[in-house]
Length: 314
Image 1 (cartoon, rainbow, N blue to C red):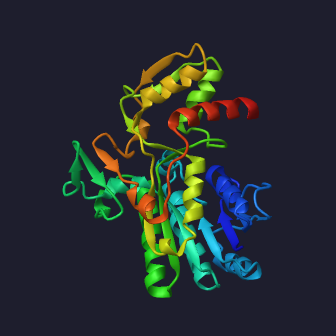
Image 2 (image 1 turned 90 degrees about the vertical axis):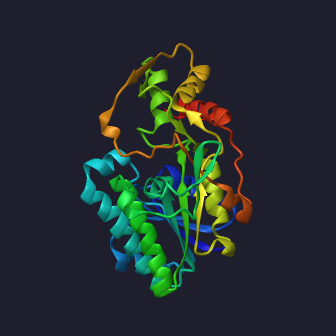
C-alpha cells in the first residue's frame, strides 16, 4: 500500500482515479478547491503554494502524486490565457518543486493528445491514408495552435527538466476525449444528453463528420493505476480510444437511447484551434504493449450507461 496524493481529486477524472486507487488498497489524499468525500483525507490547498504543498507531502509521507488539477476547458483557456498559464504551468511547477523536495517517488501528470497539434505531421508515418502519431512524434512548439495545447506542452517539458535536473521521476499520460459519470458541463456527450432529456435539439457544430476517439473514464483511470509500475517511469503514454466516432454517430447513439431527439447543425467560430483528427491517428499501442492496458468499455455501452447514470443523478 502506498500513500498517494491526487490533485483535483474532486473532479470528473480525479474522482475516478481515487476510486480505482482505493480499490487497489492505496491510501489516497485529495487536494482540490471543491470539497468532496473522495479520498481518505481532503484538504483545500492552493496548488501554486509550493511550500504548503511540500509541508503536506512530508506530513503525510506521500509516495506518489497524480497531478490532475488544471484548467482543461479549451474555450475557457482561449478566453482566460493568464489564468490558464498560472494554473496549468505555474501550478505544475509548484507541484513538481514540492515533490522534488520531499520523498515522492514519482509524479504522474495529466496531459492531452491535443499536444499533437504541435507534432511534425509532414514527416509522420502514413497508414490507410492517415498520418500515425505516437509518443515518439517530433513536437514543434511553433505549431501549438492553442493556449491549452501550449500550457500542457510546457507542463510536460517542466516534468522532463525536473527529471534531468532534480532526478524526480515522472509519467505523462496524454488523454483522448474522456466521457462517463460526473463529466464536466460542456463536454459533448453531456451536452447532447442534457438537451435530449430536456426535449431540446442536439446541437452539432459543423456537418457532424468530425471524428473523435472517445475513452471511457473507467478505462482512463485504469491507465493511471498502471502508471504506478516502475516500467512507466519517465515515459509518455497516449490514453486514446480505439475507434473513430463521428459527432453525428455520437448524436445517433444518444437518439437510440432517448426517443424523439432532433439534431440541428451550426457553425461555432469560438472553437478555433481545436485538435483536427480527420487525417491523423493517435496511436495507443505503446501503453498496451508495455503495461498491458486495454479498453473494456465500448462507445455503445459507454453512452448507454452514461445516459442511465445521468437520469439517476440529475
